[in-house]
Length: 310
Image (cartoon, rainbow, N blue to C red; front, side):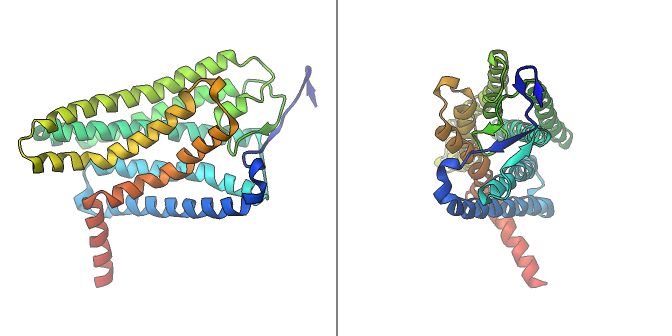
């Protein structure tokens, strides 16, 4: 079918790993292993937080929500990628592409704001400990989670409406999932307005949360430095180390992927960065919080101990 002078595209074909044909089996095994580890570790985190009353605090409530979001985020991207690597199906319908992009954007933005909420939680806990339980009450925590999800849904709706109103001349996506920039490159129309809108939105949903986390940590570090004992300073900073590690990697990858000039993008660089934040980063969250967080480790030991004693 033809629409004006343009071919009507009804599906896209992923070509993200076409330059690694000889390594597809190796990549499949690696990504499948990471995918299973990500699902398992995030499910363990959510389960432990749910069943252990010692972890029923705002900090771990946000961590549980982040792990849940990361789990769905991974499910949206990785199985389709594994299918393409396996060679069984490298095409996706227009509606399927829009759906995948919608959930990817929604969950990615939700994760950004959940990390910001966790930063604010650490700020209140260290800078205003006497009022911590009053400020970080259950109602506020639920409202923050709903607010994060709502922002993600709103931005995703705007982005999907913008991208999929354009006509497409090509169906070969130089990527392994339906990300915004690779799909827009297939359009027959001038994408200047869409690129500008995408950059503005990306800047707002990355720079604003990142800025709030940055301000929180300036205030946190300022408060920690005022603690007289070295042991007290070490203990206070230890409560933030896991979150700060995840934040640096998460926002670092997101900034490189979406805030660098379009002219600097290369296919190999884009895919490397995308693999980092869609495959490795979701696994980083439970690993960091398990290995560096004594409370989570003790909760896992308690759960294992109870099960073995039954």
